[in-house]
Image 1 (tube, rainbow, N blue to C red):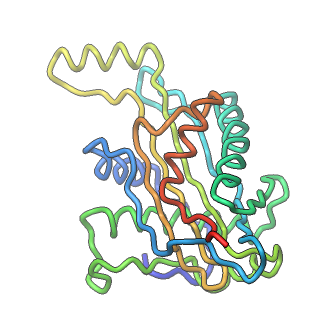
Image 2: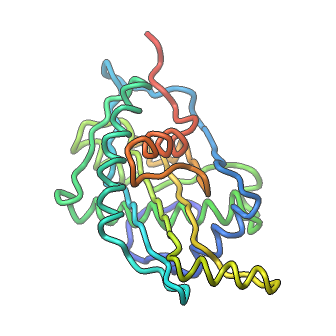
Length: 243
């Protein structure tokens, strides 16, 4: 897709492409990979206001046959623990975090969350991955487009924080199959853990910080694990400038 997105759209990234992209990028078992374009959060007000878009967090149980099935209970627990942990984290970096409730999202906000997913996967493939875009070289100039300034006006906010996270836990049958496959010299996936987060400047739509996480980033299904996961997911996130 184009390097700069100007309008929100609803095209979902195919699941096979998502899985392949993460597998290639995280095959070296790197926990995080990020780009930081700014050093501090800035605002014309006293304290930078950051919108937390409803995080796209989902847990799955991988069956013996290798099919990931959505697990509502795990997903709900992960989202609740994330919400608590991210508020504590925001206070630590001096950010005024304003969460948007999933149920209160406007159609425009839903489209921007989907757009973030699409742009995020493009960043993964074309910046961190091997499919480099010839017009970019090593530059990081990705954007959700200037239209995102509507969110700044609606919420009187400076930035928006987007999160995409997937965790696929292997069932007992899948683990047994993976062990048997390994003993026979083969391979069967036993689940995965991956995600990315972006900080978007709402004045311009530019992504000013982007972080990728892989296996070992933390367990969102329990409270202490969620604190670790949030610190990992938001590694090197710009903080409020000291006054």
